[in-house]
Amino acid sequence: MKSFGGNRNLEIAATLAFYGFLSLMPLLLLTVLILRLFLGDPDEVGRMVSVVLSDLFPAFELGWLADVTGIKLGGGFGILSAALLLWSMTPFAGALRSAMAKMFKMPMRVPFYVSKLIDLGTVLSFLLLFLLLAAIKSFVPAPGADDDFARRLALASVRTALPFLFSVCFLGGFFRVFSPVRLTWHHWLLGAVTVTLLWGLMRNLFVMFVAFNPNYGYAFGSMKAIFLLIVWVYYSFAALLLGAEIMANTYRREALLLRDLLQPDPKAKGGENELMKKFERALVPGQVLFREGDGGTEMFVVLEGAIRLSRGGRELAVMRRGQYFGEMSLLGGAPRSATAEAAEPVRLAVINKSNFDLLVRENPLLVRSLLEELARRLADMNRRVEAASGGAASA
Image (cartoon, rainbow, N blue to C red; front, side, top):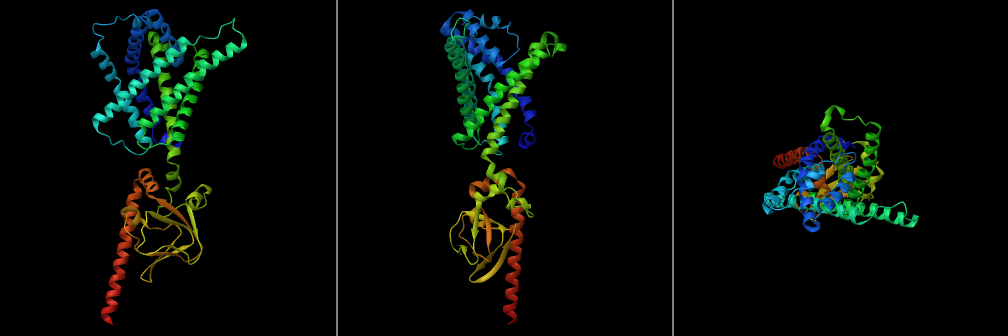
């Protein structure tokens, strides 16, 4: 919830609601045209589309749908018109892609034409989902009063389970395509199931709210239906972004745990968190962590105890609680420049390159902190070299 507020997702939901509202009519037109190509009967097409709309947009008047379904094929609605309708929906897909990049703290670095292909693919997937939902609601009959209990239960289960599964699969594919990082299956499944459940819950709450407040939006007069649609779309995208934030925070959980460790004055709870144990490594006094010249792709933060750094048998520094070392090998892949040995019982947090990249994206100020620490250590090393040179000259 803190990330949801920090990323200003309610404002983003308002933007997505605007783009989504503008994209609804092209989506309906394309759906109607495709269904009429296969079914031909405008009344049947109108019935199928109205069933889906009544589920997706509760308490919304559908009287204008007859005008949409009565549009004749041909003429201006050729291939060019269909392409223009698809293209008019790409800003909506682009806004979704930007919102996802913001959540993961990583912009999507793809060429312009690739991004547009992704947006078009997303629009087509929305269209496919709409057609599948229309087919399910149309070809799977609703339970009737004359049906026995088993048949009513079976029909109700199918009409509920299939849309749920299609929605989860669609959202899972959406999260995989739009995420700027490589997600595992349990990440996108968590986000998809969460959003689908939130949508179902919000739909029931919205229907109840409108039922108990029939004059809600009365001030808009004949525009009341459009007002209710915009409100519902806004709530729907807020739920989508909340589910995406849950997924993003699950992916970034390691960075969220480690982000305080590299600060100059780390919080005490950073070393006491039970969740930190998966990153910890314990050493006994005299145990060598790595030797000078070894390869390495990890850096370390001292949680408890002390680590002695030496080069050529000469002590360079003693790293204590809150201090870190090994960053040069992590950043540049250079061999270890010193030997690290436990001066007393010590607990370390191990940060690999993947976690470090997440940390930098989570807290850009960390880069400045690292540079300041590197500059301080370089200045200290120069003073030691000058002192050693001065002592040698005196001798």
